[in-house]
Length: 82
Image (cartoon, rainbow, N blue to C red):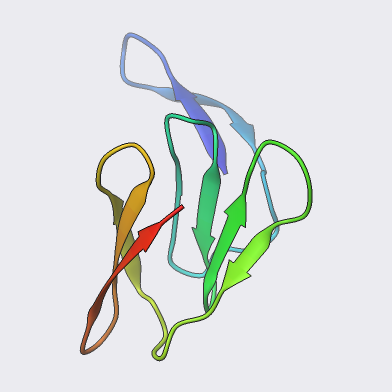
């Protein structure tokens, strides 16, 4: 879901981007949307989403730089360059 924030820090204009997203989602400055749901779905500006699988189920992700994510799992960290 994409939300906007006004000057009073109130959320408005909710927009559903995709009917998935078990734990975490984020939008990179480039406009690429990343959604964790069993694996990583990567939505670029055009086309079908790319799906990346991991040895373990990912739980959370943090953007690092312009096109890199750090993804946590139960016993590992993964770095993904998009």
